[in-house]
Image (tube, rainbow, N blue to C red; front, side):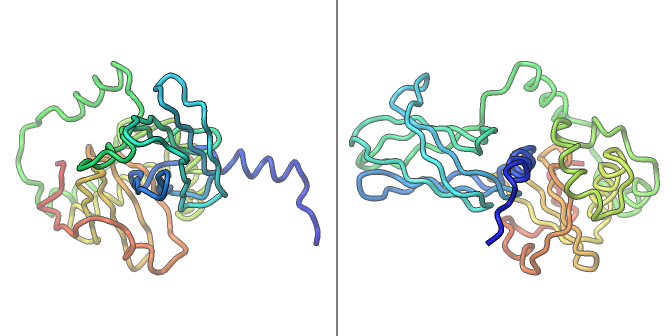
Length: 255
């Protein structure tokens, strides 16, 4: 069996660890003298968890294989003790939280996202500021589709991930640049607003998912309408497996 050169293996691991996004919140389940934590990511990446009894000292680590479906077991644990944890890949923290192991009548605490800076909170508040509201009609959405897209920095959710998404998925849409790729993702959303595409709203994650059965294009958008990802899934059942409630354009969480 021919071995993969070490430098190629390192390149693959480095590439797969960049721009990873959490697709489902961590689920904590009691297992024997510990708990299992499971979560999913948008691409295959390494599996890693760190935990401990102090938020400032997560000195126990568990690792798993490269996958989109991740699962680790934290054990042995002491009943009645509060544990803190972080989960992610080898290079990127995706979520963190805490739970009390074996506490009667309680469930593990929900995972919390990594703390955000004051600037990030301010930007988010500005994005969610109420605008003069009037329901967007299909005619209006159609007009928006034909006009020039807004600047990329206002349509893409996390600018630090754009280059990676373009490198992996830009060819799916013959995009000529990261900006062109982001613009196509924005236009895809406008088609959804016009009522031409299938949509699912995941209120728990604050994610809008959009799918075009004809072209097999899929996109996910944040609560404020900025893009999370845009690609063509290889699996024919990918859309059916996505969480969320099917909604019409009139129920979009943003204007």
